[in-house]
Length: 146
Image (cartoon, rainbow, N blue to C red; front, side, top):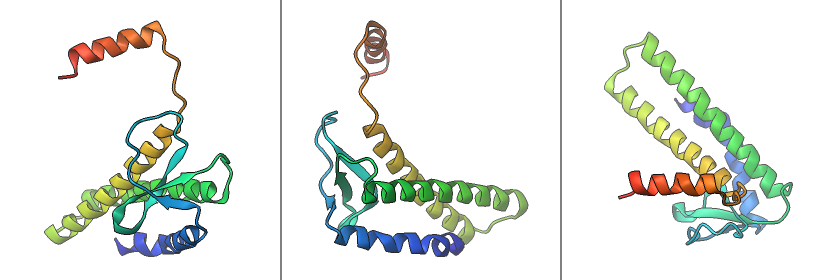
């Protein structure tokens, strides 16, 4: 499983460079889901595991492209890990230690995928309210919400 860490180690070395440039900011999670909030959740964390955000109007800025590339790498690593785990489970009888390692790597990949989904979801445009959406929201509120 160390092959994944060694394979993408050079990509992680770019992150301190991005932080030195002073564009990425560590901040607490935004309090509300404000569609006017122009902060992008970055695919890496800051010191102490705090989320890092990027405030920019330029979609193609250096840090935006770096974040896009890192998200792509993270999702690709997760896909490769999933293929590896399926192969191990199909062909071998993994021992307890190997299974513990696999679970740890799967947790890390899932955390990355969740962060990418959250970041991309925050950047989706807010749809205009319509009667069908209002009716669906009422059903969800009535049937699902506590």
